[in-house]
Image (cartoon, rainbow, N blue to C red):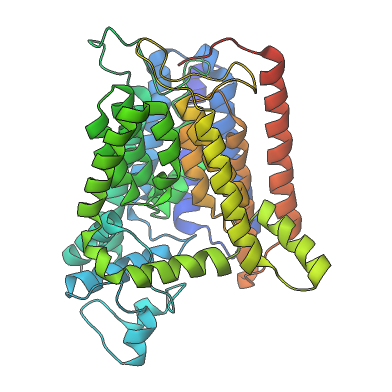
Amino acid sequence: MHRRFIFPIVSIAFLGLTIFLGYFAQRTDFQTFIAAFAVCFGLYLWLVFYPQKHFSAAENRYWIWLGIGLRVVLLFSIPNLSDDYARFLWDGHLTVAGIHPFVHTPAYFMDNQIFPKGITPELFGKLNSPGYFTVYPPVCQAVFALAAWLFPFNELGGVIVMKLFLLACEFGTIYLLSTPNDPDETDLPTFRILTNLNGASSLIYALNPLIILEICGNCHFEGAMICFLLAGITALKQRKVVKGAIWWAFATATKMLPILFLPILWRWLGWRKGWKFNLMFSLACLVLFAPLLAVLPNILESLDLYFRKFQFNASVYYLVREVGILKTGWDIGVHSGPILGGLTTLGVLIIAWRTKQFHKGEPTCSMFSDFSGPFGLNTAMFFALFLYLSFSATIQPWYVAVPLALSIGTNWRFILAWSGLVVLSYSHYDGGARQEHYGLIILEYGLIWIIFFWEARQIFLLKPTRISS
């Protein structure tokens, strides 16, 4: 097909599918949703892998801007695949009313008939965990409060405010993924967070349907954390340790996940710079988290319940659980969860130990030469997160956005498959039954691990001496 027909046809298809998925698809109608998403994801894979050698740099930029445009299209939709936004607005209304959102559970306000401005039985009815304390960190709470303050009685208005913030973060992420470091830093080789995949690897993130749908469609703040995280990585690779630590603190104050990477960063930076980074990171976190220190027990209670009780779309965790049920006759999650958490910590420490220290004049993003060689920073962080998610009891679709973003700084691409397969977990809501379909979970993780081992075999056989971006 001539390219002058490809651009409008594919663009219209992306637009139509995105509008349907963001405005009309319902998670209770899984068959219709998964069919539309499969077509959209198929187009995405075709654009990323097949025709790139035929596209110029300007044409590749067109597809990236299309991805940004699709995010803008979803600004005006109420999230239809996730009800987390209701808790965001709930917390925001409490903050605006002068009530600390971490002090009481939503059920407390209903039980005692306390209704601050914006807190209504209708909004309460949309909450998915009304008996739990909130778990969203300070940056999220600030955005929630801004949305509630600007639109105290307009749900859509509040959602749009949050989505505008996420849209700005997404734009920042795509910019960071596409922009080399300062060319005036001649003592560093030109570095691009993106690996050159047929000349247009920015499309991996910019046009990924899962990213578009879950961040700017369903309003999940992983998008903000990714932006801050990449800003921190970029600053550190430019040897701006203080700036990197501050960005890392903002990422942590959005989602707590970046704490996982601290041992790896310390190893990569070296002993002296690692101390400096951790000191500045701790001070910045102390400032950002200061409003939450008084309610720390409530936060820890919700986190403990989350890790011990919630189970959804897990992989290794479910295997361990089933073995435990066969052996003991009951769910051993209360014991296996902490054990898997300990194994994750041990695995991250081993990855940190195998991480190559940064030295001036060396490529800042490198692959290991084989499985016995050292990890580059991006690869170490990517595999630490993959290990963490593999052992987790709960894997929501939007969790995969973070390893997908980190994978762009490596030569590993199996995570692309996961970004398409993870939406099979929406079968949980089919017909409103809220029942997991274990056959689809086996299909999801079976294909992921097959692709992973195939890709690992290719890398091992090729044994590249140095792959840098």
